[in-house]
Each structure stands twice: as C-alpha cells, then as structure tokens.
Length: 189
Image (cartoon, rainbow, N blue to C red; front, side, top):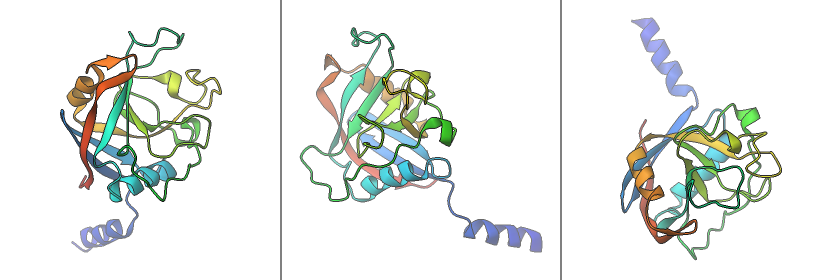
C-alpha cells in the first residue's frame, strides 16, 4: 500500500508527457494528443494559441490531395488550418524548428505538425496528415531545404472528420468555403 501511495505521489510531481486538444469544427470533432516530451517547443507554441482562444473562429483553409498538386513531383496528403483570419495575436513569434530526426516523431497517418516556409518560421498554422507522409520528415524532399516539418502529436479521434475536410470542395488547394474551427480547447487525456 505504501508503495502505491509513493508511486501515485511521484507521478503527480512529474511534468506531463502529453496534452490533448479538442478541435470542434463545422464537420465534427477532432482530438489530438500532443507529445510534450519529444516536441516541447512546438507543443507549447500550439497550446499557447489554444489557451488564448486564437483558433476559436479559425479555419481549415487548405486541402492537399493527390489530384490537386500537379506541379509537385513529391505528393502529400494533408489539411491545413490556422487562427481566426485578421485576428491579431501578440505572442505570434516564429519558433525554432524541432526536426523529426531530433524529436523522433514522424509524419504518420494522423500526425499534427506545424506549417512553415523556411526553418524557424512556424507560428500558428498547423496541418494534419492523411496517410504516412515521410516526405515531410527531416531528409524528405517535399520542402527543397530537406529540413522537414515539426511533427508534435497525433490525432486520437476524429480521423473521419479529417477525411471529410480533405474531400470538401476546393479551388486548387484552397477550401471553398473554408471549414470553420468553432472552438479549440484542452481536454483530459
């Protein structure tokens, strides 16, 4: 009994290894589990936007499917979302890129990752992978710099909603109309 009590007390003092976030969208709910241990900077950045309510009223605005990237030799499947358009976010500063060769996380089916242009430019936009997307990992060549993107968790429920969003009407890769994120909030693991 003492051992169990000691272990429970010890567990309550350890920092959390994961956090969960629920994204309520017009098409349904997606729940993601963030990996705080292996991608601490990227996870903290995303949670900062969640806690500030910045994704409430945000949009899934981009769908990348096999049929809408004719100029790309390396094709991927993702949906991309972000904060409420026009909303000023005072803490919107770019974060360092947590490369997959350092975090050990990969762009597998359901992975959540940060969108970026160059390394160390990610702020609030994120994407969810449909199927395994190794071209987005470090050394993958979807981005010519080969640095990959910062995977920082995975969808734990709602992949059917992710698929619905990906298949929604689009002009090129732009969802028309975009799919609204009604609310984003932390949930309990």
